[in-house]
Length: 119
Image (cartoon, rainbow, N blue to C red; front, side, top):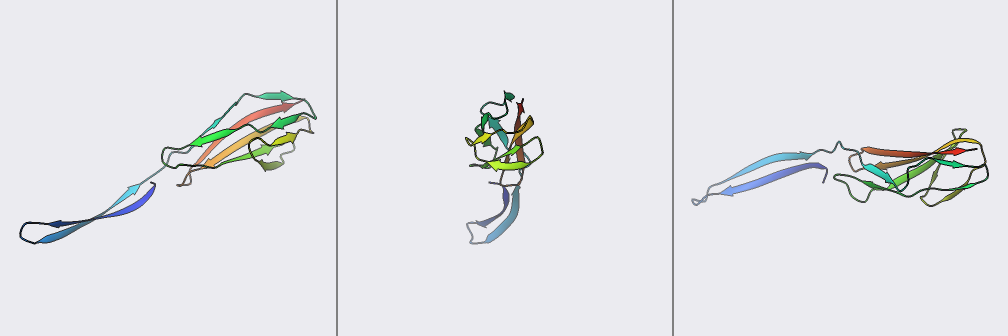
C-alpha cells in the first residue's frame, strides 16, 4: 500500500552476538486513477428530455475500492452532484457536461467526461 514503512531486522550469529539494521521504505504513488464510462459518446437530446447519468468505474494501480463522484454542469454553469443512474430532466437549451472524478489514497485525481447537447 501507499505510504512510508520502517523495517527493522535483528541479526544473530552463532556466538550470541546480535546487531540490528533499521531502514525506511517509501511506496510512492503518482499515477492517477483511470475512469471508464460505460458509454462516453456525445448525446443530442431535446428540451424536456430526461437524461440518465451513465455508470462509470475507476481503477488504480495501488488503491482499491475507489469512489466515483459524478457532477452535471448545465449551460448556465450550475453544477450539481448526482449518482450514477439518476434521471435529470433537461429544461435548458445548450451544452451540458457530465464530469466524473475519483481520488486514490495518495490524493491523485482521475477525471472523465461526456457532453450532452440539448436542442
